[in-house]
Image (cartoon, rainbow, N blue to C red; front, top):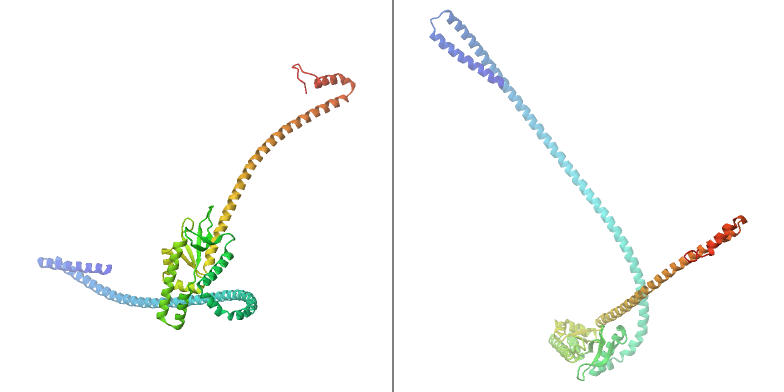
Length: 423
């Protein structure tokens, strides 16, 4: 490109020079020799200009050829680059496919490994469960056999009691008899759970003649602990009407019987609250005991009844399944109280032991001082014994040392100038 520019400049200069010479020839047409010289010079310039033009054309042709060659090369490079890019894209696609396949294979291997581990864990758990179930089944089977033998034994009693069901129904038709049966059942539960002497029967609470069936002493540190009134109620009539209506499918009768049972429970709770809750002699609540779980279940199914009785009348409704749990809580309170008393006893014992140890330390201190004085006395006695032994050895020496021996004996047994014994 720079050579083309140079040639163009030369051609332009030649043209300008030719034009200048032409003008000069026209202005000096009268000169002879100078005109010929200028003419030849013009011819030379024309030739140079023609040569320059031919060179420029050749350069242009070569530039066109070079441009074509460069275009072909660029096209080939574009084609090669496209092929390389296609190959690279294909390679990347293959690598991604291979990586995806490897990842899928790794995931399958991981899934297989996890499945094998889960299978081994499942087998181990199954074996352990099988062993535990076999052991439990053996124990349960042995227990079932024992219970079956006891059941066979009890079947005779059941057959004997079957004929007495009518008598039992007639017995429960009496309100007083029903109350006695509920009281006996409640007494059995109290005897089974609570320690002896923790409850009283037929306790008079308040100033009237009202007597509660049972009063449980609460586990507190007091000379007169508060009592928990527990009264048994067995509203059989409303409960039987409810069961009969449910068996017959009479919705209206069932609803009426349920409403009657609900009203009966409110009346009984109000009586217990007014008769037996008298703080501080009693606690702030009482217990209404229902002798059967079926009756308690029907009462518990009535929406909000138990909460209402507890909130309004401060009466807790308990059945045979819940009563032992509450009594065990009270029993745990007695155990805690006994532990606290035992802890206080141990604390007093440790305090007395500490005082005795202090006294023993004083005695040992005195004994140490006496032992030190005795040690000094023993050392003094040993010193005197060595001195006597030395004097006795001097008695066995030759007679020429007699003077020295007498002088030493005087020193041993004599009196010093201050009038105190020597040695």
